[in-house]
Image 1 (cartoon, rainbow, N blue to C red):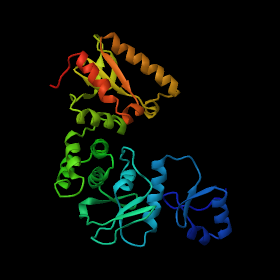
Image 2 (tube, rainbow, N blue to C red):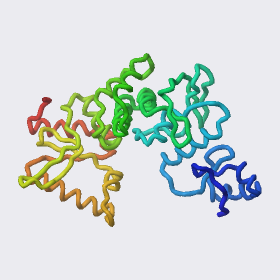
Image 3 (tube, one colour):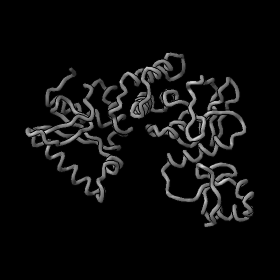
Image 4 (spheres, rainbow, N blue to C red):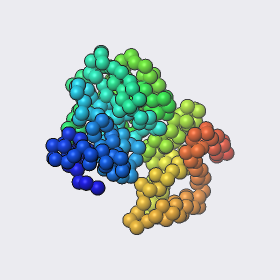
Length: 308
C-alpha cells in the first residue's frame, strides 16, 4: 500500500495527502481495494483487524477533528476514549454534546446531544475535547437501553478508572431521564467487578433480591498458599464464576494458549472443591437467557446461605 501521511491519531486525511502531492486517484484506489477504510468523510485509516470499540474510537476522533462547530465527544464515544467498558454498547453513532440548548440532531452515524457542560465536565485527552470520566459514566448510565444492568456495568468500570463516586452522585441529583435506575446502580457499583459480564451477573442477582456476593476474594490453603481469586463468593461456601473467552485471554501467562489457561482454571477449581467449596459457573448465554439467578438460588438454598 502507498504510504500516505497520517496525523497524530493515525488518521489519513484526503486534504493532507493531496497537499503531499499524492493524487485523488491514489486516494480512491486505496479505498476501492480496501487497503484503507473510511472512518469519516475525507478521512480513512489503514486496513487491519480492530475491535468494535477500536473502530468506534477512530470514527469518534475523525468526527472530532473534522467538526466545523464546537462540540464535545460524549456518551458512548467519550466512554470509548476514556477506555470505560460498557454492557452491549451501541457504537453505530458518534456521540457529541453541543454545550448549548440548541443544535441537537441524530443521523445514522452521528448523534448530537443538546445540553450545557460546566468547565469541570470537559477534559482534554490526546488533543480531543471529551466529557469528564464522571459525566461520561452518568450520561451512559442514564441512557443505556439495558437499564439498571447497563448503568451498573458502566459505573463499575468508571470506578476501576478511579472515577469520583461523589461527583457522579452529585450529577445524578439533577432531574433527567434514567436518573432513578442510575442512582440505584451507583449505590451498588463496585470497582472490584472486572468486566461487564461480571457486572451483568451481579445486576441480575441484585434485582432478584439474592444475597450480595463478595467480589474478588482470595482463598488460601492451610499453609497460606494462594489457591484462587474468585469472581463471586458467598460466606466462603459457594463460589460463582463468569466464564468468558475474554477472561481467559486477559489472564494468559507468557507462552500460554487459551486452552492452557482453561486447564489451569480447572485445576484451580478442583483445589477449591477439595476444600469443600461449591463452584458454579455460567456463560454469556446463561446471562442472556436469565438462567443465572436460578443456578445461584438453588445452591444458596442447599447450603442454607442467606443475606447477612
